[in-house]
Length: 294
Image (tube, rainbow, N blue to C red; front, side, top):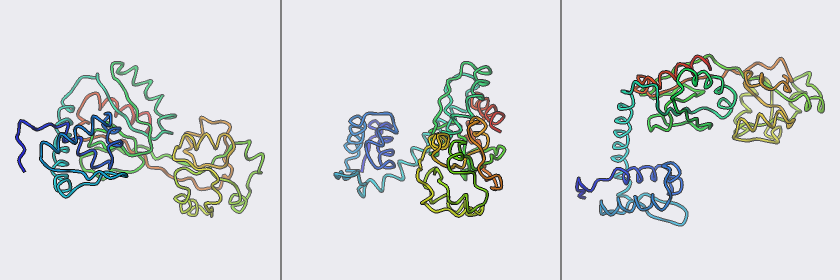
């Protein structure tokens, strides 16, 4: 296989890499911010330049051919090298201007970030701040975010992580709901009530059981992958939710339905790429987030 140096096009290489990792042209196009026809042309251009077929196109998905599988590891190495060059170049910048991308859960972004951003606006008014409010983890090595607020410690040695004060989560329900069903006086009373699930309810059963609350999926009449929607459902009387105590302070209509429930500790980490930590604008934002959230 021969590929002339002058024919190399990093956009085509990146198109192949992201398409292979996402599994479809539509998902890869969204990840790269391209139209699907543009991405398809880039992949086809790479196949033509290499003289191989990289994907088997079926009605349901794209499948890597043998040639595609063999080349994928090399292209991943190439992608990591490109990211490292970008990180190193970004790390040299000492101006408190430019773009900073922050990733946080939707609930934290809604309630905890705005006060920090107000202070940041006064401290560095020329920064452009973009926020990804999602419960999905952003890949900092691939520059999906510059700084991430996470609830678990990263294992990647290339990342710098600072542990902030742990948050506490407790049971909360609206006064309206508790007026309707009655306030539980025992665990048995609590186990008869309706709960609002965040993510998959079955993942919470063991956690609740460790606090002596034996629930089943039948207790969860409503569940969602959005923490902000879960909070809104609790506020509107759909059931009991497990919520960070700091968030509940913004919602006076909520109360603790069972004070003897043992609060759950939630780790909170602030994470950035190590090289980005030497960048002044990243450091300014990182330190303010650590102070404000911590």
